[in-house]
Image (cartoon, rainbow, N blue to C red; front, side):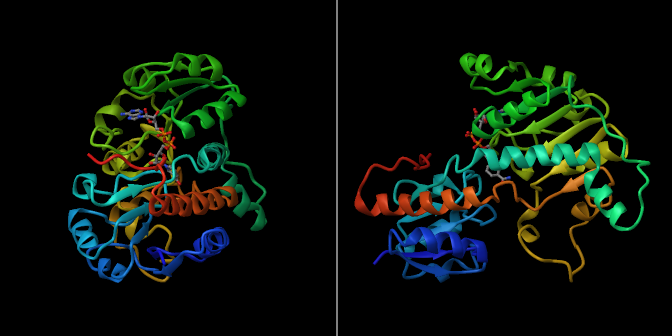
Length: 332
Ligand code: NAI
């Protein structure tokens, strides 16, 4: 019997994975804790570990996984920046779920854009409180403005289509350019410097890598239009949060919509409403009226959860059946 240690389990994971597992009949041990050096021993006796975006899968954890006989690390997400692939080597196979629903994340980015621009989150509270004033809720037409999309993979492409629908002119930066794609979707590749210079809103859809760590830093922000809107549904560490805060205080950045945050692991996905926020940077971010933070929910649609569960279990089944792995993360 194939046994899976399923870390970071939430009620919605159980529903979608139990449903998908009817087809596979695997044994799943549900663990609510993060995977890290303190909790890795819980996977003893399992051949598979299933992990998520905020688990710490560094060399120490991987070493112990291997010692315990774990053969497969099944990430139930697209990104794998939290996995030390060097340490995994060839004797711990890593699989993931690419493109389970690029629409989910792109549509969430669009929700952040519209909410920030038209202040619907504030209007909702106002009218419920009997306040029908629209003072302070002024937005701008997206139509005719310039959007800069960094990363034109699956999610970036979906967002480009949505932004085109708003009548925006879309500029994009990606080291891998595809001119046929640009012509078909109607956008223009440019340099990062030009994208920063021209864009009224900038949305991040590249992976977190050593090259993209703190892509948006003081230097990048200095090149941007004053009042630019920044949207990050990628990974928190794409933005130097301290630089963002400095720019927000100076009114250099007009607004920021963040579905991810550099140090989100201790907060996101958890109800912390009864405890003080001890992360002063997060607490400061939450004070800005023009910052909207959501808790890494870009992926959170019914369709995405269904696809994540199906693909993760299929990846596991393929591995143990010796079939070709379509979603293997290549070892470094
Ligand atoms: P993808 O792999 O389809 O596309 C990524 C694109 O980024 C590729 O075209 C690649 O060439 C480009 N890229 C690589 N390095 C770059 C650089 N230095 N500058 C600009 N572009 C660069 O990935 P997909 O599915 O579009 O996802 C993008 C990211 O979104 C993931 O890596 C993940 O971190 C994040 N994500 C967030 C979710 C959420 O719930 N908020 C859910 C799923 C993914």
